[in-house]
Amino acid sequence: MPFITYLSGLLTAQMLSDDQLISGVEIHCEEKGRCPSTCHLCRRPGKEQLSPAPVLLEINRVVPLYTLIPDNDTKEAFRGALMSSYWCSGKGDVIEDWCRCDLNAFDENGLPNCSPLPQPVLRLSPSVEPSSTVVSLEWLDVQPAIGTKVSDYVLQHKKVDEYTDTDLYTGESLSFADDLLSGLGTSCVAAGRSHGEIPETSLYSVIFKCLEPDGLYKFTLYAVDTRGRHSELSTVTLRTACPLVDDSKAEEIADKIYNLYNGYTSGKEQQTAYNTLMEVSASMLFRVQHHYNAHYEKFGDFVWRSEDELGPRKAHLILRRLEKVSSHCSTLLRSAYIQSRTDTMPYLFCRSEEVRPAGMVWYNILKDTKVTCEEKMVSMLRNTYGESKGRSTVSPF
Image: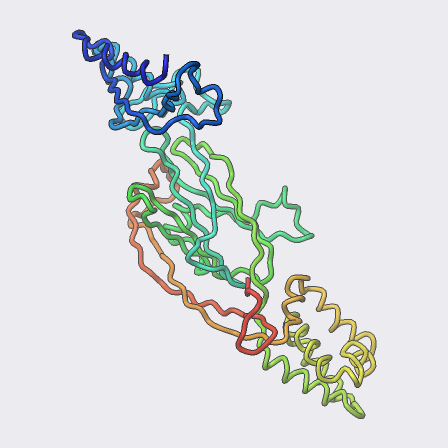
């Protein structure tokens, strides 16, 4: 029997049914194309007509399954089971907008865990491009409509280097509710809350404004519910942009050092050259070396001239600072031209309108916290790197 004939039979049976045995099911049939001629399974022996191609029924109305049950008691039981399965992992009952867990739905710490605590997803804010010192992060609120209530988010951040045991050193922890919204945080960190793409969803953000350039940072976020449970961790690891350099100033210093090294170098000139090179940052020193070798290498490169004029000890103290520059930044610092620009970006700064008494354990729902927000601006200096003036060929980040 062709598929469409089978469906037509169902439709006829429903029309002739007085007791609505197929209540809630609506069947509509039509032919939409045919099987391809290359399909030998679709050919009907002895007939030129090809069987119609089966087409999925179109859904024109969505209703909960339990509404299809005529008996009220059964319908309510089915409704409760579906709600429990969806919101309470099938281990509790839905009471208004929370889950009452069964006696066997408790974790090893004695906390009810029938209502799952979703993992937040930490990400870089797409509206704020990271700079050498500024990074903005954001995440969507994970509190479901029914069940778990989120009381706080905890954000940990740390700088990772070869001297840090990443497993033992957790870094600095910031409570979104107790530290950031309450104003106990520093001026280097600001918190924000706004609406996500869906109006009912909150979007949380944190901007760090005092990070170290060319540093590898690890940010870790987890949610805390009103019963003290922690969600799984969400992690973002990134390296901040390279330190800012004033290319014109670096070229001036390179000319100054050449003039001090040129000819007979007195003790006073040696000390002036040494002090000048020790006062600049490691990135500026790298750029000074680049300009010196570009203009005066025919008279001896920067390393050789420094050792010859200042002596091995002082030259070593200067040159070992170049080791602080990462391979990524050292490549950019060899660019033909480096230009600077200033970007001004908006960010949200929010403060809680509620004062939490000291020494009390709070079980507030973070979403219900009343906050006052204002838009502020942050200025970010950036370097752009290129092989010709006025044309940037390398991204600053």
